[in-house]
Length: 163
Image (cartoon, rainbow, N blue to C red):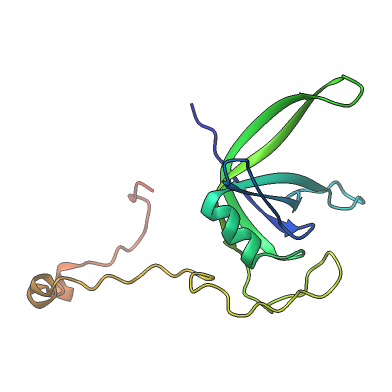
């Protein structure tokens, strides 16, 4: 089975950090996620999706994220059944976050939700991630040479090319 959710959206409110009776941090946020499509003449619709982060992810989100910030989240979808105050059965859908990432640099754009984004003292060093470039092993780079240009022939037409 596969249960994987990846979302990108803006926070609709500041993160809410709480602790369980066993002192485990849990943080809740809501993402405003625009739909990819619109019908002609209509405005783009937005979904508001509840996200729950636990433990160190919860502490990270509550420390660095604020209302209006564009974030990316990956996790799994979970449903909960509960009864409201009138004893009616209800179902809630929420994303349990495995990872939450910055999707823009601080100051790149103003939040669309209104208000000014609070200044962050110093965002974490992994705010924007770039994969490290692995250097080629010395033995390969020293012994490798390009084949002579004469080994290649230019095709006059592509009728025989299979792709």
